[in-house]
Image (cartoon, rainbow over all chains, first blue to last red; front, side, top):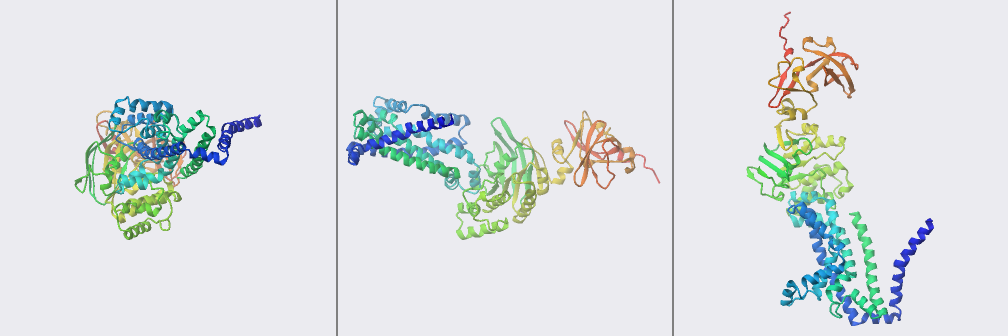
Length: 265
Length: 354
């Protein structure tokens, strides 16, 4: 019985994870290394990878900044009543519960060309939906809880006494943050950062809705893979997918490392 | 620093944590804020530090109102209950923090830190991190860190609460000496009366947000001004109806009066041990507890349980033994008043002339 269970567990693991990974690898090199490179070097593939890279970069920066600030306010702010904090705290988790596609749709409805705000931005020559800003907003929506949820518990556990001690020793907010708070939360931030990168690298639904998936313009790596598969260009799709997988595995290893450091400090 | 506090109030939601507290503290004094947990002591301390805003009232340092000043500008040192050491900094960096913030020149910081390291007996530990230190050592680092920027007022929140009993004793006398040597005005919060009595020049008893009494430990012990202070300081037994005690039948004023009796107010013994037998009454030994240097005796006197001590030099009593009990004095109180009364029968109404 015990052997059967162990065997079953491994079978599931292999069928779900190992075989698809191997399949992507083999698929990418179906036409040899040349085929793999050719698929990757297509202008639309290069552009899509660049778009993904840009989205990841901007989203990670913004999410790190606002995630840390949100966590600080939710845990420390004395000027927010407990009730409002509780409400905000539960809203932070909204993106976990809402399907990314719905999230993207909300952004289209709010900022699309037919909406008041969208029309206003379009009037001043700033396209949000079906353009880069919309993709960033959609990805931010999806990744927002990641940083907040990593940093908040660490801040709570840390308590405010060290910060108060710093203030009685003459240090104001900025100094206190950098010399007292930051060293304690930095590994949680690194962990949240890796999660954010991983999530925005692989984001599909929200971006698909908001970007309109326009080739060489708003197409990202994931939406390109989707389109390649639709067009039966499986080898090329596997090539791009392999690049994404490689990054993800690298991130996973980093995550393990960051997690260990987080536990140490 | 001369500290004045006037009509201080603090609410946390519906909870009235500090109620109309006023006091003055003279420069260089060491004050103990004593009272049961949750009585508002820490809130008062935090308001003095500027970590909490008073609801109303005034705090003055050197005659100047400091209510609007943030903690950074008050020139105070604060020692937290759990020390709140910066855990990713070494002992040296912890102590140096306040000086670094002030942009003190490096050489001067070094000198000052080394001086404090010496003073607190932490020599050789400068490069350790807080988690590599014992509780007592952490406590010393917290003192040194608070003292480094040369504050004018040192505030200590339950400074010894997290330290085991033996080292606590040591640290107490160490702190007392240190503060005397530095000559800094200090206020510490504690719920341990032994600690307050031993360490403080003056004690302020705080209960349910009110300042019950302020005075030297001896004053407070001898002349408690409220029933709360009387019960809180020292050991005591309360007798519900004071007039039932022999010698206090006529001491009772007005309505229902209770008597509070400390162990040292009571003398017990065999008949032949008293010169004035008429003032004593009968009692039965209920329990005997050996307390190292003396016996703690529980006596039953007309249904009241009284507690007192008896020297080991005297005849050892036995449980159930009939003895005589003399109550020298009692602290009487009712709803409106409280006063100390001596046993009337002690002053022999008919002295026998020899």
